Length: 555
Image 1 (cartoon, rainbow, N blue to C red):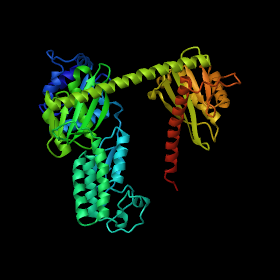
Image 2: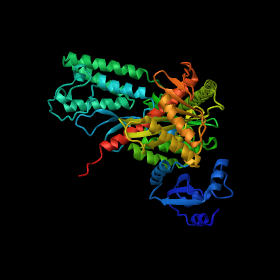
Image 3: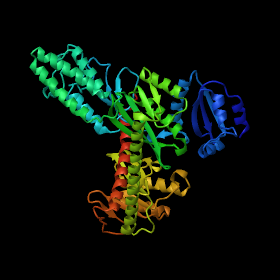
Image 4: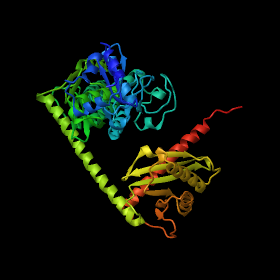
């Protein structure tokens, strides 16, 4: 332990806050929170502490400590979440890929609210539902909103009393026509409330409301309206019937279970509303250790509900979590009312947790089977390539190059890397063409290859590892241009060109192309890496082109 670290440990305050453990290079190892910083942080360095082997290794690497004091434990929790997102420490639990799954947002800030798809939840008065890891389920919900509740989907600016031209959706019965005052605002907002109930999984309440409206319309001899509401009722009934009844408690619950097989950790979130299973989501976690699943559950719950659209009244967890009252208080601020966090040991609630655990274990088995299958196909593809192209070694590392431009402007080069048949995005590189004017793909390809290979020869760490195979997007011309650069630099790397029209593979010095079998894994691998290079290069080119088109004029 360094002298600086000892001094900081001695000066720790008796207050809530966050702490960051750093290694000798200043890299963040772990971010944590505590109600009493002095007690929590010092506990890591006590000889009597019974930490797991993983935590002992982490503590041995700690060279520095950074502490931030907060006013409350809840504030410390919020700060911890932000610090984990910023630093991505190795020893913290993280939701794999940190994807921003879509939400359905009801735009309540408009006179006639409409549903839109968003990727982030904001505290702006709108209503958010999700996240939806299954895009099909989200699209189905949007179709029901449109066809059953006739909520508008257009982006028109509409005020009460408008007399705009009706669109096709109105004539197809998919919109109630607020743009032409075909529906009163009060009645439209009732439909929005019914949509809210439906998206919250409270289809029964929406049914009760609609059935009462249907009876009122029938009693008033408004049979056309009654028939329309009857069709809405039947459509919602079909959706509700598909939602499996799991609990007789009729509670709004999220059931969260974490399962690990020693190599991967999966979290299952089952959304139960009024006793019915509304849906379930699965997340694979990074940094979760099988001996520390309780801590992994806590960190997962915090990260999940930081961006979730809704917080239910009750959470059922597979493992008990530290500082449960702090977690409940934070969830209460997110929900706006009391939230109960339970770790059931028996009864119906425990059965729900076991069901979530079973689903998480099943997801891990499926993922493992996919990985084994993908690995087998990748090995088959590399062996087929080695044989078909007569390569001296197995093409474990393949680099592919592509040029993108619009009539010679904003010309860029892309380099993508596959290792063991899978993309290695950390090694992707993009090049802005500097020495070529106009649309000259041959010269542009030469510049890109020259810059890449020269930096590899000079020992640049970012280009140090040379490939087993170079793939150039193009035919004989592009391949010949690339070979000139290799000869110029004295580099001998197996290189081929892949022409898109007939998927012909060209080798240097051979006039005839190689046609790989249409269903061969080797061809699939070449197509994947070629398409990925095209995507990567085109994305960069469009970015530069957009920047040029929006650049301010200088007089």
